Image (tube, rainbow, N blue to C red; front, side, top):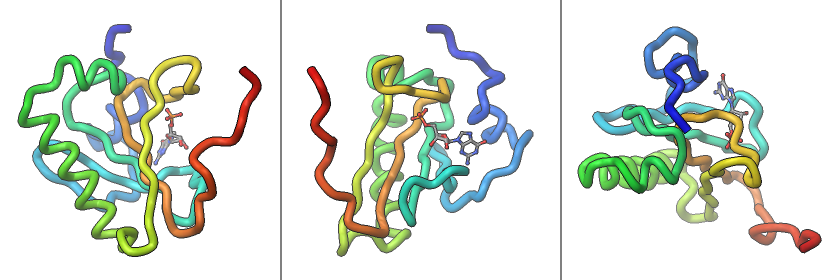
Length: 122
Ligand code: 5GP
């Protein structure tokens, strides 16, 4: 899938629409999810134009990969989530219900998150 520069996170990166920003560095921007699923729900996006985790892990430079993952850890630390625990995940594609086609990692925390996934029909 080609990257669409009009996706909502690209607009956030260009400051065309606002976000509740909590972290920014050379490689990453983090902001609060507009529809939080947990008391703390943060999105971290790379600054480069990558559609999804598949695109990012295949095509990002070593510096982008390392910088982005470091930022994820930093954001979780800054949010005070390390001691109690947190979860991060990325949705890729249809089966995972990825809604925004700019790679992002969700950080969930601030409560007991339960088991990782609910049992589903095979
Ligand atoms: P996905 O399903 O693609 O992994 O998750 C997309 C996430 O982006 C959703 O949790 C949704 O609430 C969030 N989101 C969608 N539009 C906006 C927006 O304009 N601002 C912010 N902060 N989050 C958004």
